[in-house]
Every structure is written in C-alpha cells, then in structure tokens.
Length: 479
Ligand code: 5AD
Ligand code: SF4
Image 1 (cartoon, rainbow, N blue to C red):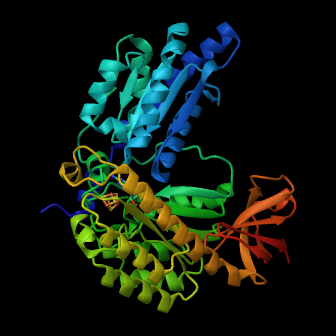
Image 2: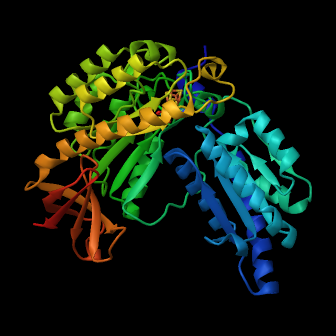
C-alpha cells in the first residue's frame, strides 16, 4: 500500500510544473519590457477579489505572479491592459456583482481590443457559469478555476497569443501547489493558507463542489512560510482553511491542527496567531489545550453555529446539536476564560419556522457571542438545500436578519462595556479609517481599538487603556 506521506505528495503539483510556470512568467516579462521600450509605459493590471480570505490569499498569489511578469497594479479600470476578477460563489449577490462588472466592461473592451479580461476563482468551477459567460460575455478572454490558479502565467500567455477565448477549468478534486510566488499587501497581518477544500457538504454550501476535497499542506511548508513572514516584518498570521480543525487528517502521519499550532509557537517575529474557520464537530480537546498553552495563539475563536434549532442543524447536515454546541462553548471557556467567541448564522434556511428561528435567538442569548456574522440564506444550484420546496420568503429572511442584529447589538455592547477602564494589549496596525492622527489596532480577542498615537507604532504591541467601549469598537489611550 502507498505510504501516506507519498499519498499527500502525490496530489502536490510537481516542481517541474511550477518551474514551467516561471518560464512563462519570464516570457511575458520580456514581452512587457519590449512594450515599455516601444510605448514608454508599463503594462497595468487591475485585480479585484470577491469573497473570503482564502480568495484574498489566492489573489495575493496572482499579484505575486503579476509582479514577476512585469505588470504594475492599478486601481483604475480605464487605464489597464489586464483585468482579473477572482470570483466567489458562496452567495448569489457575489455572483451578481461579477456579472455586473463584466457587463460594464464591454464598452471598454470595444475601445481597447488588446485588453485581456480574465475571470477566475470559485464561480468558474461551476460548468453552468462558464457556459453562461461564454454565451453572454464575449468580451472575456480567459477563464480559469481555483484548481489551476498556479497555471495563470501559461494561460495568460495563451490568451495573449490568440483572439479566441482560453478556458481551462479542472474538475479534479484539487491539488497543492507549493512555490507559487506571492505578494502580500504591506501591513502587519498576513493570511497563510494551511489547507484547501472541504469534505463537509453542509446542505446549503457550494464550497465543497468548487474547492474540492480537503488537502493539507505539510507542517514544514507552513512553518517555513510563517518564518518568511516573520522575517518580512509581519507580526500576526491568520491560518486559513475551510475547516482548519480537520487539518492533517488527509496526511495520515498523525499531524493535527493542534500540533501545527504548537510547531508555530517559536517562529521568530510572529507575535500573534489566529485561525479560521473551525467546524464545531471537529474541534478537539487537544486543540483547546493547545490554544490555552500556546502564548501566541490569540484568545479568539470563530466557531460558526449556523442555526440554533436542532431540526435545522440536522437539515443543514451540520452533524451536531445545539446542546453539543453549548457543551463545547462551556469547555472552551473553562480552559480559556477570557476568550471571545464569534459565529456565523444563516437566517431563512428552507423550512426554517418561526419556532426554529426563536431557537436561534435563544442560542445567541445563551452563548453570548462577541460578534455574529449573519447571512440571508442564498439558494445555490447544485446543493441539496436548493432542491427544497419550502424556501423562506425574502421578506421573512430580512425580518429575521433585523431581529438577530438588534439582539446581537445589545449583547455585543454588554460584553464590551466592562472593558472600559481596563488596559489591553493592542497590535497597532496603522492609521484608523476616520483620522490620520488616530491609530487602529486589535486586541488579542480581535476587538478593534482606536487610539491616538504616532504612525511609527504600526506593527508594535502596545498597552492601551480603554476609555470608551462601543458596540463594534473600542476607544482608548496609550498607557
Ligand atoms: N447562503 C447563505 N450563507 C451561506 N454561507 C455558506 N453558504 C451559504 C448560503 N448558501 C455562509 C455560512 C458560512 C459563511 C462563510 O457563509 O454561514 O459559515
Ligand atoms: Fe461550506 Fe460547511 Fe464546508 Fe464550511 S464546513 S465550507 S459551510 S460545506
């Protein structure tokens, strides 16, 4: 039988394949240099990312490749030579936005026929979407999916050589590409993807169909990337995966997510470690202990519950009950008393009755989350929930959304108020949104703190006394 180590290496894109992509990058770079000599300006790329942090991290890889190929990024669509939309399909509105953008690019493409329009990401892993784009948005030049993101240079090269559409989407279970260049934005925080895909098939969710099966990167590769980030000046890393709690199960060498956290503890330069997302069913006692013991792992856990009614949880295929969730929250809080808990809730799942929704409000009241991300259920073709007949009306969904928001605003404020007067550790990130003389940062519990201070403090851990505790953010002054 194949060893597990080999098994996990087998779904790794070969070094030769990655080297080939570097060749394409060099080739395009040469073309772009010739372009500068001829026209006296650099080629410009416009890259827009939709959706979750994993998509943002993928976009950072696209940025890394663009940089090597000699493209300069611009925020202005009108000027650019290459447009890339890295799409999301978790909810319908994200898809509609992409179609809107593609539609409005038609006129620009008519004016600038040499411009390349590329669409990639989760939406492109759906056959019907690709067909729709091929039929309706002829201005698109290049389509690729999430599984072959590393092939972007090769595909772009092809698109530059032909007027025909280049579409390359793999429907495989997915693989792992190490060694793809990555260019992160400047700052103190970095995303670090530790695994790809999802095996859970929650009834409402499209992710397992577009991101493939769970596959974990080797601990050594992750630790190396974290070291590099520390060296580059990042102070905080957020480990990303659709369900980080099942990290390592596919490696079958015994590595678990708790082991990974312990391995990252002594990475130089990194002061804080966060992670998302956790599935309650897979959150082990060992992980709770690792969170408690690892000094750099922050006291914050994003633990999506999705619904508070056992009927709906079962319909959603979440594989736990509300009672299990209460028990889990208690267990976590008994080991890490000051932890902040945040969650995701979907309102209006098909068949959700008033009574079911009351159970969700009741769960929120009982668990007392620091923050709740609430989503209106969005029907995703291809998922089991989309076939259900008892869809909830938009009106009812909105009413439930508002009721939930009002409840959570009250709880959030109640939880923040006792922080007034306390001194907290804040990682200063940079000027706040509203004023350049104010700095913004976060507590270890992930709460936003605004305080007066010099911009040079960005990247430093500082002590701040909280002077005012609001519902969504805190204000304070440097100690
Ligand atoms: N409709 C609404 N929300 C959804 N999510 C996932 N799929 C859907 C859907 N079809 C939410 C879940 C998940 C978050 C990232 O997005 O709450 O935790
Ligand atoms: Fe979607 Fe469920 Fe997987 Fe999360 S765990 S990505 S909600 S299928």
